[in-house]
Length: 452
Image (tube, rainbow, N blue to C red):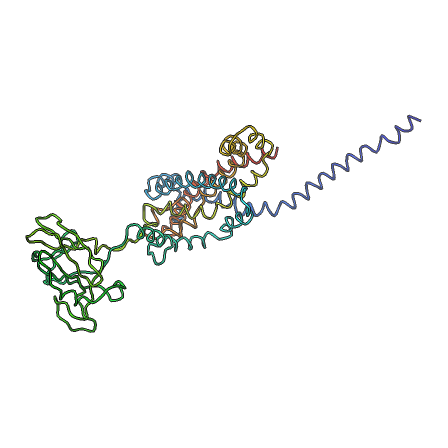
C-alpha cells in the first residue's frame, strides 16, 4: 500500500512546479505591461531630456559646432552665474533649516492647543496656492509705496507712531521774501530780530488739503505787538485762496502753519526753541538782549518715511525666502506632526515623572526621536529649493533680477530669456542636476532603510 501511495502522489509534482513557474512568468509579464506606460513616460519626460541636455551642453549656441567643455568653462567665468550659485547656496543653507525649525516648533505647539486641526489647516492653506499666484501676492505686499505694499504700510505706521513725521515736507520759501535756505535744508531769516520785534515767516508749497485740521487764520496773530523783552512772530502760508493778496504780508484769508519748530540762533548757537500755535504764532520770552536769527530746522521739511526697500539689491533674496517660508511652513509642520504623533508616549511620560521640564523633554527626547523625520523633511526641502524658479522670477523686479537670480532662473534667462544660448543653458541644467542628485540619492536610501 505504501508503494501504491508513492506511485500515485509522486508524478504530479513536476506539473505543479511548471504551473508555478508559468504563473510567475505571467505575473511578471502582467506587471511589466502595467509598468510599461509609466516607463515610457519616464523615458520621454525625464531620461531623454536629461541625456539630450548633457549632449547639448557640449555644443555652441547654435547647436551646430562641438565645443567640448567650453560651456562649462564659460559658466564658471560668468559673474551672473557665480552670483546664481552663491544665491542658490544661500537658499540651500537658510530656507530648509528655517522651515524644518519652524515646522518642528509649530508641530510641538499645535499639539497643546485646542483647535489644532483648524490651525494646521490655516497654515497648510498656502500650499494650495500656486507659486505664480504667491509670487504676485508677495510682489504687491513688498511694494515700496506704503499706499500699496502692506508690509511698508505697517513699517511706516510703526515708525510714525514712535518717531513722528515732518510737518510740511513740500513747504518752501519764496526767494527774496526774508528767508534763505541753508545747505542742511533749514531756512533762516536774512535779517536779524531783537526782543520786542514781530517777525513774519511766509512759506508756500502747501496744499490746502495738507494743512492740519486745527490750522487757524494767521492775520489776527500777525497784528499782535510783542511785549517788552519778547520776540514774537507768525509762520503762515503766503498764499491767498482764489488769488490776490500781497506777497510777504499776512493777508486776512491766509492760514497759519501750526506745529512748526522755530529756533532763535545767536552767534551760531541755538538760544531758544518753540513751536507754532494753531494760528502759526510763536514767541520767545526769555531771550537776552541782542540780535537773533530765526531758523526753521530741516526736520520741518523732511520727506515722509517711505519704509524699507524690500525688493532692493540688499534684501531681495531674504524677501523671496520669506515668501517661500509662507508657502512651505505648513508642509513641514504636517510631516513633522505626523512623526510626532507616532512617538512612544511612555518615554515622554517617564521623563515627566522623573522631573524633566518641557524644554528638557523637547531637547533630549523629542528631537532625537524625530531625527529621521527631520532629516527626510530637511533633505526634501533642499531638493525643492534647488529648483526654485517661479518666486524668484516673479517677485524680483527687472533691475534687481540679477541680484536675486538662482541657478534655475539663470538657466532660463541664458537659454530663453534673451541669452538664446542653449548650449550654456544646458550646461547650467547639468550643474543643477549634479547638485540635486546627491540629495535625491540620500533621500531614496533613507526611505529604503525606513521600509526595512
